[in-house]
Image 1 (cartoon, rainbow, N blue to C red):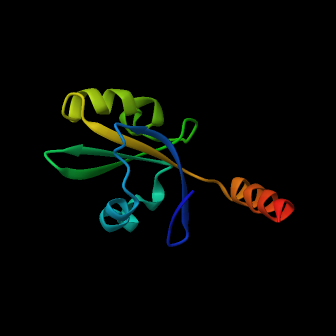
Image 2: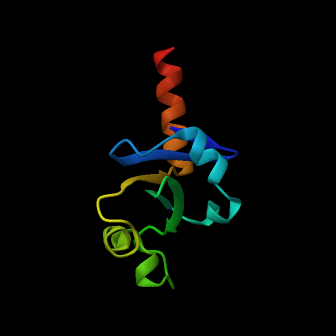
Length: 105
């Protein structure tokens, strides 16, 4: 689990070991808090972040939904670039994780 401020994320995919927590933390902006998924791609040695919403959210443009991530990577990122995908954890998932940790202790 990756935590930034009050936001918690799960690393869903880490293609070519792109994820670097320190670099992500430096680049992260509160503007990304509204998204359910964050995609980070590395081109020319620079990290770029983009946000996407979960399926089922109303009034969201199709190119900003999670099912558009693959198209985003193919269309807007350098071919074969390293990238990662983070998913924002829900309050229920956080509570469940906390309960599991407490049971293991």
